[in-house]
Amino acid sequence: MSNSNRGAAQVSLMWAISLLVVALVSIFLAYSANSKITVLEGELATSKAEVTRFTGVANGLRDQIMDIGVQVGWQPSSTEGPRLDGVKSAITELGANFPSVDPTAASLEAIQAGLITDYTASQSRVADLERQVDQLRGDLDARQSENDTAIAQKDQTIATLRSENQDLTNNLNGQIVDLERQRDGLRDQYRDLDTRLQQTVDQKDAEIVLAIQGTASMKLRNDVLSDRLNRVARRAEMPDGSVLTANANIGKAWIDLGRRDRVNPGLTFEVLDRVSGLAKGHLTVLSIEEERAECRVTDLLDRYNPISSDDLVRNAMFDPGRRPVAVLLGNGYGRYNASDMKAKLAEVGISVVEELSYEVDYLLLGTPFFDEETGDMVPWESQDNYKVAQGLSVEVVPRRDWLTWLGL
Image (cartoon, rainbow, N blue to C red; front, top):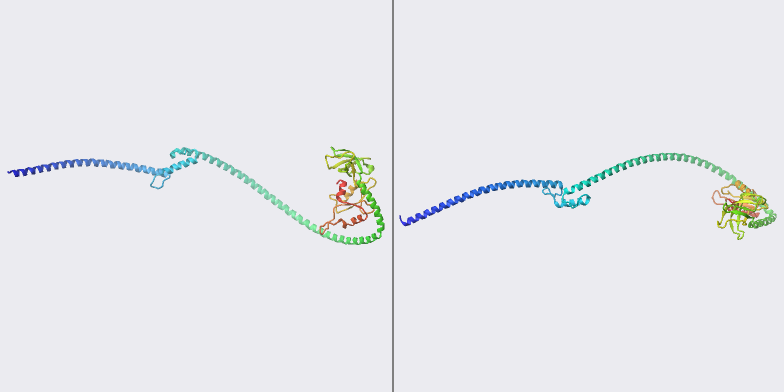
């Protein structure tokens, strides 16, 4: 063969060998790659199994976290777990509101003991409060029972009072009927008395005509009586006696007037200071002897100036030489009637007569008269005895003055 063909054959052999080598290398590389792929596939399967296991574990943990979130709360949505900032805020709030809870606790478990302690204490307080409520309810029931009893008694009392009020009303109605009958009778009496009064006035007018005819003799008698009354007035200013001795501790004194001076028990004397002539008080006669009388100190004007011996005594109505005569005029005499006053005046030596005359010394005024229709007070000047007393110059003594003389 020629060199050129020999050379071409060699080149072809070399390409064949190269291709064989490449094929063997490719086969080796392919075999190596398949082995690695098998190993990687095994590792991949193992990794997938681990991922599956970890995914299950993660899902379990997630489910537990979700359950804890449901139990604990502070879970914004159903797909999220509890929010730690909400839990921590709640722990801080519990620590601020429950004394036994540590506000710095980091978990709900840490605050559980304090909450249980406070809850137990609160339960005890609730039990105590319930016992107190039960006791208060018992007291309230007892008070209610007492109130019901009191209301029943009150109703019974009201019923009794109403019955008594009805009886009283019936009695008052009966009394009103009787009083109206009496009023009608008194009106008839008043008409009769008014008729008699008119007749008396007519008779009085006739007597006045007769009295005018005897003016001269009456004037002469008046002059005599005026002179006598002037002497009596002058004597009233003079002392009637003096104090023999006095004892301020027992409130008694003795005066130098007695039975021979016509002194009677019950007569009251005004006590005057001998030097100044000022009043010191009053003495009322208790008992009498022949020449002296025992008296009681009825009032003392100045306790630092007591009644003592040599003080003077006087009574404007007392006259040792004559028994005074008086006439009473009035619609009453306080708590006394005319008979009582006559008896009391007689006890102190004053005679009481019914009619005014020249022998009468005093006209003693009592309670004024009142008009039955108008209720106005009738002036003394309109009374006949008052006019006659002025005409006879009889001394008119107001009620206050002569009751003072009597020590009433």
